[in-house]
Image (cartoon, rainbow, N blue to C red; front, top):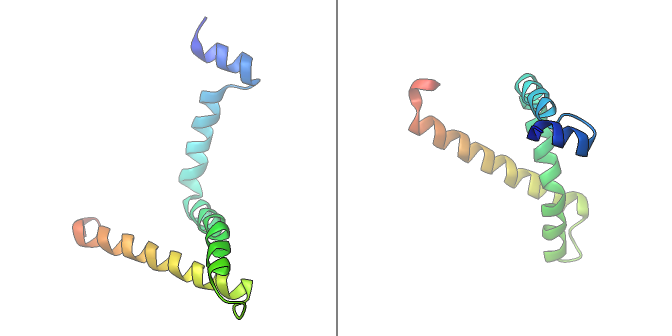
Length: 89
């Protein structure tokens, strides 16, 4: 038996076809996926910031500070790429 058939029988669906569809979806909706991942990664980081702060900081403030940090990190990576490969931009 082919490994693809074994995976399809075990999982109940064709895994390789699903990966192909996921790649096509990610090409069409790359900004939406990036925004979702940014917000998803912000949840555990905001809890860490809130836990390390005094009682004066609200959870909303901790979430905002963490989101600002992630935006700064994204800009850092983007500008680093622009400096290294200016002909692509």
